[in-house]
Amino acid sequence: MTEAGQHRARWWVVGLIFMACCLTYMDRQMFGLLKPMMQAELGWSELDYSGVVIAFHAAFVIGFLTFGPVMDRFGARRGYAVAFTVWALAHTALGLASTVAQFGLVRFILGVGESGTFPARLKAISGWFQPQERALAIGLFNAGASCGALLTLALVPYLTQAFGWRGAFIVTGALSFLWLGLWLLIYRRPPVVDAEAPAPRLTFAMFLSLMHDRRAWAYIVVKFLTVPVWWLYLFWLPDFLYRNHKLDLGVFGLPLLLIFVVADIGSIAGGWASSALIGKGFSVGRARLSVMAVCAVLILPLVVVPFSPWLWLSVAIVAVAAAAHQAFSANLLALPSDLFPKTVVGSVVGIGGAAGAVGAILMALFSGVILEFTQSYVAIFWVSGTIYVVATLCLHFSRVYSTSRSETI
Image (cartoon, rainbow, N blue to C red; front, top):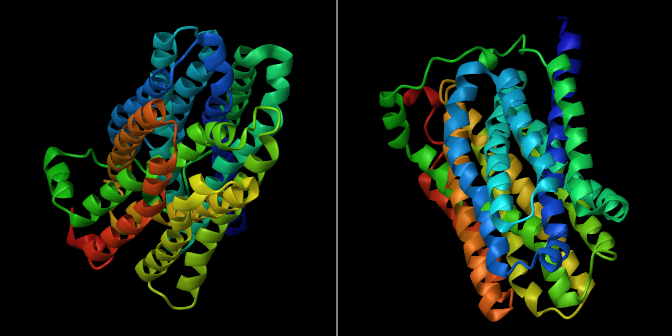
């Protein structure tokens, strides 16, 4: 492949991953958007809904720990295809579920499949992009998360009206198999960077060494702290707008549209900002951590959102916070490939993802209990607004970029 061909091919890879992110995040936003309708039809309590969400996150814990080493061993092409197939089948099956137990089981299977897509994405990006470009590439495909939410707002009300909420899951599930065919047809191992070559198997000794590495623990802790907040936007934000501002499925569109458009901009801007700083002479670590610190400050105003009687002030604050989360995430996701050799990148991502899923389980349980007994989002938004400051301080004091790759593992 010529150099020009390689350059085009890697952006095709980003485009494919962007499309997959759109599809998986459509599922997440659909589940939150349809919550009031499903609760009314199926008679769920807040704790029932929370339990289904927890089943999804519990699967992430298992899936992340399983798929990380699988991606290290077999590469992104085959690993992504297997994980996405499991996800697509489970998403489609949601249209057939009726009881809380059935939804919990299907969401668990869906979570196992989706958890495998995370290390696959980063494995592919680490193979096609050099370190100074990875945050931008991650920011671009990570924008698919917000784009998926936007597509949900545009399509799901019409699909629900035409086919019911069950039909909406089945139609979007069918679309997912079209992406799977494109992935298998287009994606190939990267010709320049060797990160897609099958890696040596992660040994127990290597795992123990990883668990003694402060950089790994910093990444794991920060994922544990920050991942749950994005799940809050997806699974509970429509309910917040319904409770606090009396919006329903017919009028959610514009407020959520604005929030996720701004979040898309934040995802791309976060990746661009660190790449631009590196281009101006900043070290990779200083650039990443500087951007993340700014993001933590921008998220703090979330604490006042439950007290605002004005819809558009609430929407503006949440939009900026969602954008800052995406920018923070674009740089956080680049850390494993910055800091660790290819033999363990997938494993680090998997363990970090499992930690994020545990945090999301606790957030779902916390949110369910708080809403069931207080009917208030005050405590939930207070935690969500302040946690990034804690996460940023964790990265700062752990000095994650002060040791080179070659000194560990």
